[in-house]
Image (tube, rainbow, N blue to C red; front, side, top):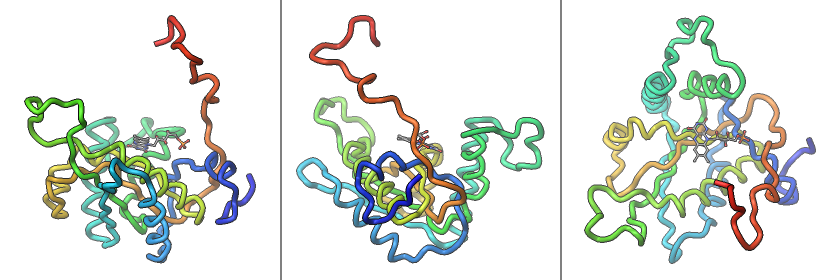
Length: 219
Ligand SMILES: Cc1cc2nc3c(=O)[nH]c(=O)nc-3n(C[C@H](O)[C@H](O)[C@H](O)COP(=O)(O)O)c2cc1C
């Protein structure tokens, strides 16, 4: 794999942005994060409303608070004990092993970046059906998130999307003072990576594309 830096052509960069879940605890200068976030905010959004906000957690106690709830949510979802010593022969392999590594070491990541989106009803939801909280503006937040991942990769930072915070989002709002007008869309632990970046594995676009009409029988 060729080395990647700020001069790397886009087509080489984009195929190497893998979920990097194993991170070193080594400090990352905040200037790098500003650089990353300022790439994030170059993303497009409807009417250029830029409905994203970031909560950057760097304080060790606050990271620990997040990590504990994240681990409990993972236990609820996957049933594997929070305590690695109690996992026995259920110790996960492959991608799941890296997901668990990320969970076990979440508080050690230099930064936990919460990308939040302003809540906004999609046009197609009728006024009468607008009950409770609107969803965060996913359509605008995800391009911003992808820009963040591309920028991390370019600067040699490891980053990976996580969404398990949804399980304890009410607590998250209360603990960090996040108003209900925003939803937390993703949490991205960021730090220098342990291990290699490597290319992504994806199905070629030709196998995902129909010309002029959807193929009968494909669903
Ligand atoms: C909407 C969305 C939600 C995701 N949620 C999680 C998550 O909760 N935990 C996680 O470890 N990865 C999560 N991911 C990352 C994917 O698992 C990852 O991008 C995918 O498996 C491809 O792996 P690669 O990036 O290493 O090629 C999410 C990605 C997306 C786009």
